Image (tube, rainbow over the protein chains, first blue to last red):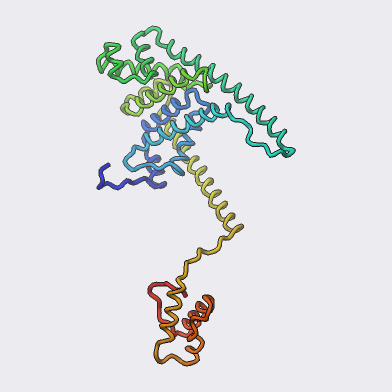
Amino acid sequence: MNSGQIATTRSRDEIAAAIRSLTAADLARLKMVARKYAFGRPIESDDLLQEAYVRALDSRACPSHVDVVKFLAEAMRSIAHGEAEKVEHKVTLVPIAKTGGPKDEASSIKDEADDAETRMIAAQQAERCIAVHAAVIALFDDDPTAQLVLEGMMEEMTAEEMRELTGLDKTGYDSKRKLIRRRIDKQYPEGWKP
Amino acid sequence: MTGKGKRERVALDRLADVLVDDILSASDEDILAEFKEAGGDPNQNAAEMRALFEKSVLASNKKRLAVAKAAVTASRRSPTAPAATPIDMAAARARLRAVVDTPGLPQKVTLAARKENELSDADILGMLEDLRELGVLPPDDSQDGKP
């Protein structure tokens, strides 16, 4: 943005109007995004989407130049990461300072019980992550090139790096990415739950 | 997740980010075709998504109402003192002197104010208020030295 431009954000009504005018393709896109970000998270895709809608209306500033679908996708990403962190960080929580009062003992016992439960949930989630990671890679056992591209995607390799690694041209590479997306969607239409 | 499974979790997160990027940049035709291929009905999905949005609007409105109610309740429980405007007492005293020195004022009005340096701040302000009520005090443009 140059200095002559004024940074503007959409009002609540403008965000609502923009969402109400989304096409069937936009809404299908949003549903697919919600499923991807709910993938392996302790949240349902519809709940994720609804929370993104609420945050878009209530708290997140949506710059006027940003596409509303992208804005909602980013909100979902942020919520999904937050949900995962809730479980991850809960494991390390310890009871806060004791006052020496009679309630201390009861509070400690409750916290430890919660902690044990969240540890168990986190451990199960970790096992599930390992299993799903292996299963997603195994989906492409019949296509070593797609498998290589998939692993590159998981390692944050750039498109150029992956094309160089696999010898694919742009069209071939894009086609593999599409194949990967479709096969994962087919295998996990509603995502997987940890 | 601090150890076991963290690498896989990070890898799946990256995969989700890349797949979302692809979804966001795909054409409408591709998206609709993929959606149907996965067994979805785009029109039914659109209707459901719109209904979900209207439900979210209601939830958001309820939340806003609850926040507004809480603010009103809090404000009723602990009414804060109106913000005090600092008063420039030197200016107020100067103003009173200027009024007292104005020729033609009734003696009764000016007598009490002549010993301005012996009057307390509260007396000065009270006297200015009285003079205003009598219509003797000209309007104060600067608002210094209220009233």
